[in-house]
Image (cartoon, rainbow, N blue to C red; front, side):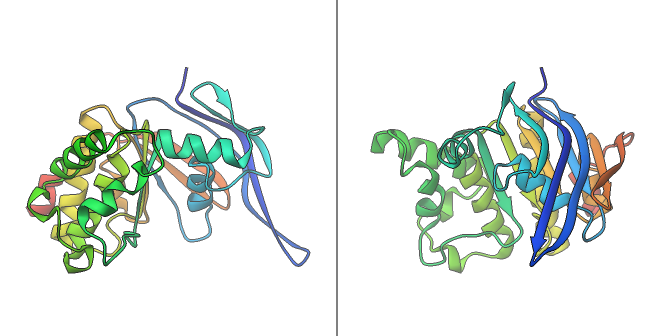
Length: 237
């Protein structure tokens, strides 16, 4: 059974009677432990597909199955619960609270859980350690570099031990060295068994995955394995 399966996925946007078809019959499967890149030009539908896969939006038509369960009939509250328990998110703009510490930012997904404070602390410290920022635990996020902010965002995404990590242009606001460090972390997470779904416009970044979905005009143009998978060390050559 695939972790994610979409069949004939469609998404229309209605702008005062003008219908725009963002997705036009997308079908694919993603298995647990895969590292999949979704690429395509602006307007191809890649972000729309990621938003639907991550329960941030709903399709207009078609079917979406997550862990064998169809999500079309779930309420918004049920979707929010699954999203918080099963998924992690890393965005291009980091989405951190600047005045809050690294600890407080990473702790956010746990605040509505039933975990006792000691267990929450253990999870936060473990997530921060996994991205190499233990020494910054009580520093305000606003004082961090761009690369460090993205590492905090990854720690926050990991704190609930999600089934899937969605990364939307995670290196888009970073210099090449910081971007390489972020890809190193994602690469290592995938090696440990995490499922990674990466949206990017950068072909070289996409090649860190073991499979690339190319979208064009709301449809899958190609779905190919990566023959010579890229590794983060290549950034420094």
